[in-house]
Length: 337
Picture 1 (cartoon, rainbow, N blue to C red):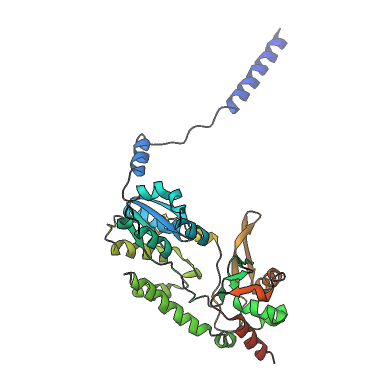
Picture 2: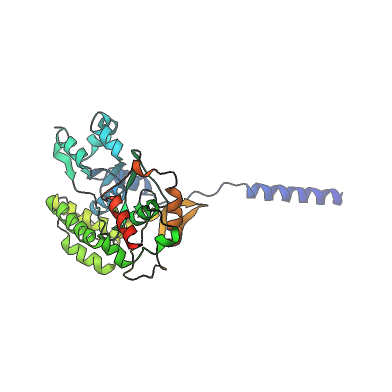
């Protein structure tokens, strides 16, 4: 009898243990005011709509935290811009109608919306933050009319591309990465022109941040690529835009720059070329990832991967933005004689 009773007790204990371990997890702790907080957040004004490219998410984020309003955004590629200005805008009509302010860095989109009576009074334009001051070697390329991608995504090295089509080896190409070659390729002049053009482009739209640039310079490199600024740069530009457009800034918290996710930090980052021949510290951050982590490589790796990416490219079908590739090839060939 006792033997049977002991078995029953053990069985009951086992069942209790099983029941305990299968209980659902407790719900997250929330304040009693949580629903009201959510409702008020959704109803916050002003309502912004951002229509732009890769900078749109952070722009929307800073519009929101600086004004304590609401901001939505849509990424518009070149093809989407063309479609938008025909009948494609109707796809965004609900957001366009609900917005108090519509911001765009796409001039074609701004001009189209300004021509529409229903939107013209709430459309504001400011240029893309685009500057090759830190990266005069970067160029966009198209092959047979299609955007060419390489180890750094849409960003390609003019120098590496020219060396490849000039017939140089990877080792010979590495030797071209030095200040005297950059000077012959006109990188210094390009850098100065890029900064002047950036300031003029924004000043034309009523935004002067020349004093900001002096401060940014003292803090180090402030562009990750030609069109990917650091988070602080986007914050300061958005702040100046709000002041220009007489939209009240509510939030002056000292750490608000960190409140907005820096989504561009997950993309490509091109290093600053040194002022000497020591390229050992050059590390390129690819926009691609693998095995759940980022992909990084030194200059040797960049040259190797770039050469591989160019293997199926026909030079006569290649176009390089802002650069005469044949002239660069000629300069490199003269250097090697």
